[in-house]
Length: 426
Ligand SMILES: *Cc1c(COP(=O)(O)O)cnc(C)c1O
Image 1 (spheres, rainbow, N blue to C red):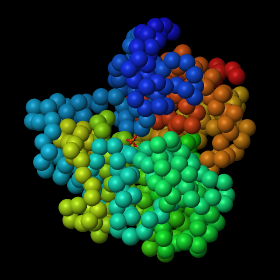
Image 2 (cartoon, rainbow, N blue to C red; image 1 turned 90 degrees about the vertical axis):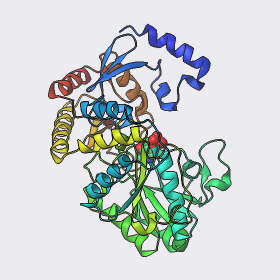
Image 3 (cartoon, protein in one colour; image 1 turned 60 degrees about the vertical axis):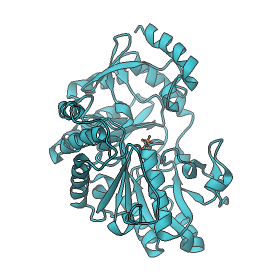
Image 4 (cartoon, helix red, strand yellow; image 1 turned 180 degrees about the horizontal axis):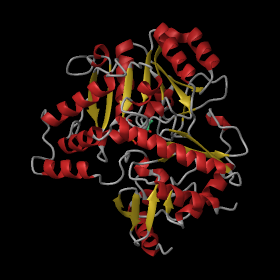
């Protein structure tokens, strides 16, 4: 496969963009080689700048549940172009999207009553945390090792060793004081949560979790554990925040909260909600959301928040998300998982929730905590990634990242991937 133009674009990019990219994982550091510059997306296929085609399982890291350029989104954007690009005033599209979201999710999750739109997942989470602190009047937040919540200061914390109570920054440029009140606990460990709440439950503003953690492998938790988090936060007057930037509209319309039948106090959204445009949102109980400006004392704002182009894409996207669509994705997911795991000569096994899948090291049990992921297996993943890339399948360029199915994917596409995978030799 000739990728000469990607090679030269990358060299040029490195002159102007740090590392040649605008988001680090795109740089292929964990799989090696030169990042592929893509030019075009159609259905579930990408075409790179050299004209090579790839079956796309990365799906722009999650947003593309209906694939690239679905007709209803393209149409909505074309129509919106003739109206306006940005207004900086209230506009009808944001009301429509808010109604669609709140009414659709609240059918399963009654705590979703109000929503505010922002422009990214990071912004949604950052704002939701400020709101949780403003609402409870408490400082401390609890997150889990193995969950990613965007790159805001308070969340760039690394897991300490057992006895560390104060968070330690996980990035240069984050002062220790900014993460002092962020506590990092291991996933799937009730006792750690119980001990923390017994000690300082009255200081904890919130627990934030990806209900299906999908940013550091796919660390599927039990429903009982998630219910336990709901109970213990409620008992101590802390909020429970589900970060559904990936899970939302992915597992079903009402996301992981609906899937598990749990009512978090706040839910954050991103990725799918924008239909390929930059949109984030946080939603929850009216009593909490009404603490934000202009109604309340918690400040939050955005020049492009509720942007009509972004809202138009989001509306078209969410309108496509029917129960039949999820049933179709589930069926494809089940087929892929069953067929993949039938190949017992591979160094990986596949785990999956709906249309999210992940390959983990076949020599170990399926991990449920970050520290159970075998770092060594990432080298094997890198070889597998390039094996697939060179044969026209684009997986995420890191073994810690999950894959996504989109609705345009057909059985024949899955069979193509399965046959390529079956030829892999370590
Ligand atoms: C992607 C992601 C974010 C950050 O969203 P951006 O739009 O990249 O800022 C936050 N939380 C979760 C769970 C995510 O998957």
